Image (tube, rainbow, N blue to C red; front, side):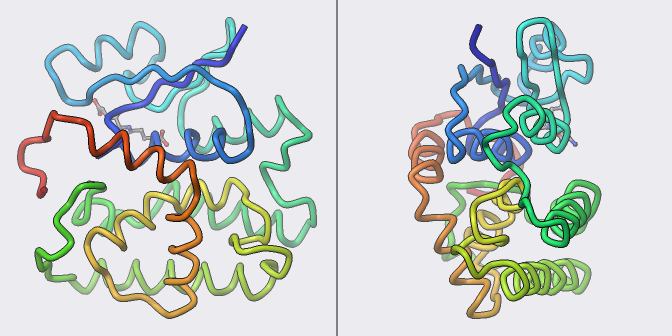
Length: 217
Ligand SMILES: N[C@@H](CCC(=O)N[C@@H](CS)C(=O)NCC(=O)O)C(=O)O
């Protein structure tokens, strides 16, 4: 029985992008179930499958897993050969720490720069001090991971891992809000945005016709 991944609109659903891109890049086959967010009845639809009524959620037969980070961990256990997390203990520890930091933190950035893949990049946007502090911390995380563990490839820990998936929506935000970052961070963003999986998600986002009220486009 194939895995089913419940996701939201590709324009807006930053949490959905995380397991989706990880599964695509790491070659885990799944069936996508897309639920347009914040529509009348949309959380009731998701509640039929997952107890929070939120996306993403993964369905593996009788097993349901929600919360993006828990889904990535479940996939790591379910498919031990796919190297969801780096093998080296130090790299793995840092990858887990920065992924948990992403999952629990960066609230100012998440609130004030919501993911909108189709945002007009030319539209200016003031970056408040608390968002700027988040940007600086993320830039430092990316640089630390790349410097300490990135020698074997272009991703945060060399090969693509759950940490890249957790930060993929940040790449989208930094790009769509034209947020200035270091040259190394920009290089990393280019790597993520060149992934065929990224392009697939972005192309689908472009075709979505429903625009969220109050969100910039
Ligand atoms: N911490 C959760 C966040 C899930 C979440 O907030 N998902 C949003 C979409 S990106 C959602 O389903 N919102 C619908 C709602 O709140 O009714 C995760 O990591 O999966």
